[in-house]
Length: 311
Image (cartoon, rainbow, N blue to C red; front, side, top):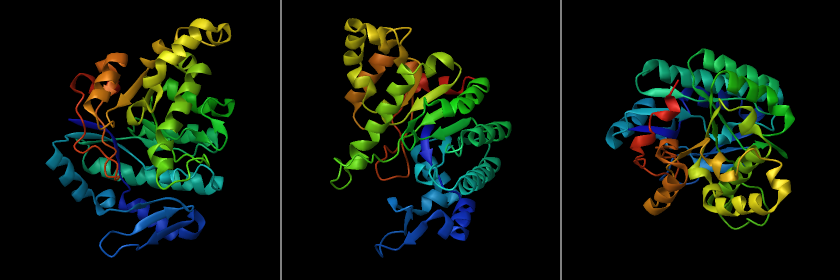
């Protein structure tokens, strides 16, 4: 089985964080004697830094136990640094990518990689994507945007042009929602995370990004957020409102089949619905391991495992 949504923080990246803790606003907090330290970056989204995140042999042991033969390994979104000082963001991205490449080089038959890029400076993000893919990385993991700019913003055109030219995989992974209405504990994750994916994906459709860059393979985390499950509403809007039809080349539901989706959905009936809507060849196994809200072992999608790696 392949796992296309799985994360790690190699020890090399942790060393960089420790050496640059003040600049990166990174803290390692021992909150519970029975648990590993928590990593807090920028005061947001703390999580337990379990040894499996950074111990390569332990990570591989977990893969073996779960029957996962190959992974498309991603950096974690907490370390995107999009809103940090540009020099720090660039330095962090390169440190992370080099640390991941060391893991891949030690186990090239098991580990494929997605890079992180400093999206806050789109021209540098383009350069980092090219650098990473020149070294065999498959593409990049990106958040839903930077600040108030969604991924369709003209500032990101250099990145999309490079991704299209190189037929990159672009893994759209959400960040915690900052909507003040989601103030109760964990709601920014439970409800806000799929919402952020939904907004970003709909924006890519209506802004024409999928039409302009058809060679990019965009993977949506967590089964596409809420997008596939309200596609009927978007299609109805296309049917009744000319202003919507003018924005799109085809009905919204046709664009769903231009994305790929992971299986991080937890319920088989939800996965069955997604399969019926987008087809089995655009669903790939994913787990979100080792985070707490993971599907482990990943739910299988046997007919879709190979399409994301077609080139």
